[in-house]
Length: 306
Image (cartoon, rainbow, N blue to C red; front, side, top):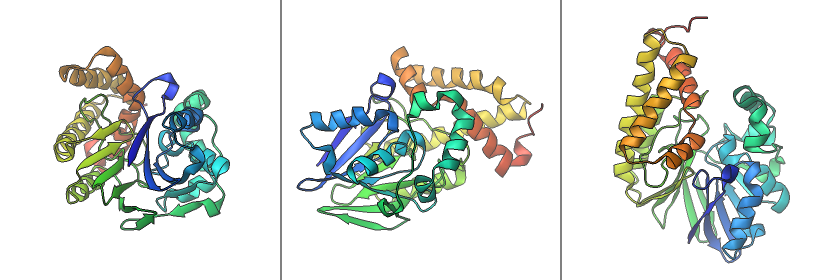
């Protein structure tokens, strides 16, 4: 049994989704918690389902970006929930100082507003899970897939009996049945690894995907194929602007207009565009792709002029 809870991030629906999988009587597995700022909202959503939040005994983190697991520490502190993450992410859950410093450079004085409080998790409540690890929790068995590209600490989790993949951000952001678009935040974007992660997912032939932004996808391979095309074409769009000598600050409004035009062409309205932007800000993608091109393909992206 799978339930989805809308975390109502900043009061807006369909931005951040929390998944719950029944493992046993009075034992549930959560996939991604959302940030700490939505903790109370998620608890209320769980109670509305007739479930008890203290029965969320396990939390599978797709990756340690704050919109996905920034609130994991609250679940560990309030309910003793065991948190699972890729080995590269575990140290930052136990001691989030570097994570907070990195995020603060990006979000500045909006940190508290966007993500709430950030605190550490005691080591005994954090478990590292790498590629291929099997997690047998009650009647539920999850296979861990290491899926870098969006982040070097990104896992996806395949629920074997349902053939359902909990994909985090690796298959993109899709709102209200709209196109799946790639989130490209700094600092870990790596297109070659991302392509390999998508190929790994295809080999599973999943019957459904669950994405944090937002919800269930019933045509996985079709979505993945379309997403991969957009992943590379949008990255190339940014590369071409860099080669024109444009700065990130000059590219951001152009990229935002480009993505909005693409989404409007798919039939999305202004409210849905706003939800996409909240889940996947254009400025973050320009920064992430600029870093990628300059770090991995420096000949194809000039050093930004001062």
